[in-house]
Image 1: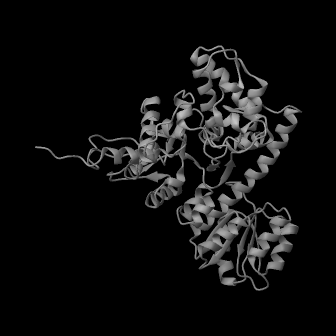
Image 2 (image 1 turned 90 degrees about the vertical axis):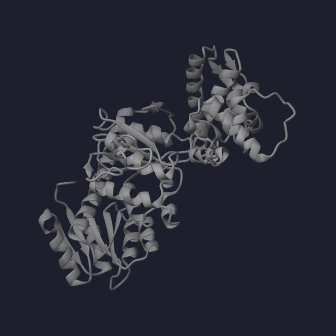
Length: 477
């Protein structure tokens, strides 16, 4: 809808405020209707079907929030921007949960109103385009569902919905926010968005915000100039510049410190940034894709994530389902991993026994696809044969059995070393933790993110532990 006129309903009971909004929007070519009450707003919304509604919360007959809830309950997909003065943050959170497209506090400058309105109308246009595309895709697919898409494996309805969403939004410029449990494939989804977009020939740059020390994060994103800080012996290009023309994927964005979120917000809003130690800003063209395994709105309420940054990044959400909710997909994924690792390890494995498949189906997979990957690799590395038997699977899967009961997650000890039923050496928990982390690092060739994935912990935890174990530097001489 960007660049084209639309229908805008302005719900404002203060004449001066209504005139201010109309004057701000006069040059955009929109058809604007103004009403002063909630009852009139509902009547116009139903009869006129506007593309966007600018909705004041304080109305003479009843609340604008009630108008919003009523419209959403009736199935209206009109973009609704809630406008109010002196509202606390919990009000913003409440209206967003009720289905508002955006939230705009009074007083607002013209540029902010225009930007917010156009962004909201673009989102509505995307929803309409998405529905049309879904209908076309459904007809084209006939009765068969895809077994995979852009590196994903799975034919379940939940994954078909993910594939359709990625196809629908890839061609737009809208920012994408991916959520899902650890191990569900958030980076794979980000890469799929990039590959399906017009930016596919340009760089895809991924940055794990949780794996980078706080004092280095700004330099990793924006780069630095020579001499910007101790140890900066030469200038370095950051992820923002590397991704120019392409896609910048910020994984685990919820781990980003609040002070860094302020600088990222400016970058998202303006497209410009300043390298650490630099004297002038630089402009780039990037598409933002972010991911987290937390509830982003809950992080906003808890004060750990900036509300304004959330509104800028959470434009099109993609939620990846956990493996336990994908039914028989788990067997499709396991078979694909078996074929892959058998080739890599030069083994003869071709299939799973019925008992092994029952155990795989019955396990809840708290670590999702990443955990399944580790289990299959473990089996291929430690055993021989053409068929994976149930007895080859690590103990938690055998404990779960076909009944699907809960079981503890696979530990790194199971994945890294074949341990017969031996007598376990008892030692302090801290020492056991140290040995496991060092063993994981040795197994992965000192690759911290991969070791953290095997241990199912955050990479920043490993960095902190290593620093603590090294201790303070000793001064000699």
